Length: 294
Length: 273
Image (cartoon, rainbow over all chains, first blue to last red; front, side, top):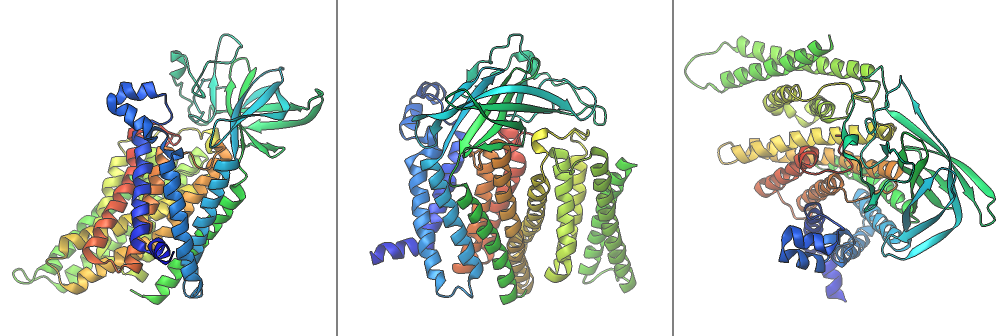
């Protein structure tokens, strides 16, 4: 036991962990993540199969990274405990380590208990909402239904209906389609017809980006409206513990939206950890500057 | 009018760099041409004035652009670069006295001039702000990152100078460079932390998840971890001098890669920068 604690407390061990975490993290930006095994065989040949089996193609949820982060958590815990004795001298360092412990705990809770999903809402039809757990693939049907009541697009300047112009990639992608049915979904993302990629310019002062605004009705099992909510880009709303974000919308007919639905119970912990971490970083600078003047 | 402020800033930095360089060459002259002591002073003084003028014009340019575009002027590669260079100069002026940054004046002036010259080749058109970026988090996230990158650039220059000079110069100069590079990382670290965490909070608000392992996020975290490592090794393992300077270079390489590389090599959530 003593030996294990000494190992966890050693800087060498922590540094090794950090370097490994960095390497795994970066590998995920090089190897495309979350595709089918056949894609990897095509890109990397026989090595692709090995990458897939080693979970390097889903590295951010792999046992490797989760294991390393767990070890880092224990190492931080031992380290923070060591600093408790002289906390007056090492306030900053104690706070940063506590902050990281709390953040990682929040992240673990989000992984274990968090849920997320997308719901596609054509105008008028109420839809059931299905979520999947953040760690696995179990489906859960929520006890209420939702529908798009109305979608409007306002512009702060004059008209500039220029398709995707002015909309951040991956955040809300407006799409003009000839038919009112939802667009094809490819791996959770909308695929665009080629001509949609042409950006028309929107000179400043004359034309402004589009600001879509949707009204969403919620129904209970007896088809009674139990809530009406307004949604905009960057302005999610919460309902029954779930947060709803505007993910996609139909631009021309204004008859369809896609919402992202999340429930991250670890968020308060993550944010509390952020506060500790920032206060700690400031405290370190103040004390270090006092102790060792240049 | 606006463009000429940009040019005046560039000219101010460039001339300051040249004047500082001439003064430096003069002051190093041990034998040979005798130099009037007054002349050296004259060069140093005019260089300092030129650098301040460059900074003032740079500031004016940013204020005017802010007014014209109606949003915080650090969106898109051009604005982000111009704003970051401004932050480097700001950090220099804030810390000049306390940290004795005098000997960074030549690389600082020349880098600011070269940086602005490069920025002028980028797309400078004023673009409307994307709805997803309309948030108060924009100002705090971007300005803390720019301040921290500014200090990290100065720290990088100190470490690079340390590595260049350490075999030749006397110990007091190199010790100062070594200590300065550490002090600057220490100054930058809270801003780096603030930038990273406010980015996560903003991402949660705009995209629904505070961490998506998008390339920009991954490399920003990597940068943060490298500097955390730097501080740990420096404070607990007494790393100093060469080893510490080399790690600092790696850290700044991560900064550059996060700032520029990710945008050119990956398509991710941060594509608008």
